[in-house]
Length: 219
Image (cartoon, rainbow, N blue to C red):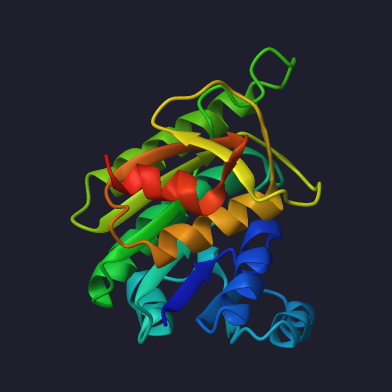
């Protein structure tokens, strides 16, 4: 059973992943910021850890991670707070987390990133270009580290009930994916350690999640 530290643990994907991990007997340690987020995390069987990513330095975050075996980074500014928050969370926050994992002796690191074509052609503000730039640089920072990393790039996220069926590959056509199915995919990557040092693009599809991730392990 794995002990998983989830940065962005109170977010849409992190919360779902925490629930799935607990149901499978793993230890989910979601990082949360607001006091009112703790009860619901405990209710699903998680062991929440309080901390604000934007206020933690490498050593402080490493101390919170201590005892975990895997880090999942699913935090994101979500367009709130403008470029400053995107830079702080999606950019510098990821770099701090990578350094903290190394300091804590944790080698396995999963990052929820962004599909390269995300929302292109939809008339979004110029800040979106900054978002995509920061996401790409975060990918680079992790890929250049010595960690045992996996970068997951889901398509447009939806709140539809997960089907358990996806399309995963090194490069696939753009599409939608439910947050449920992203969480299921993260669980499978956690449970399949042979999936390593690879970037996976992910959308809804026709292949069961477990089979789709097994195929990635064979690459």
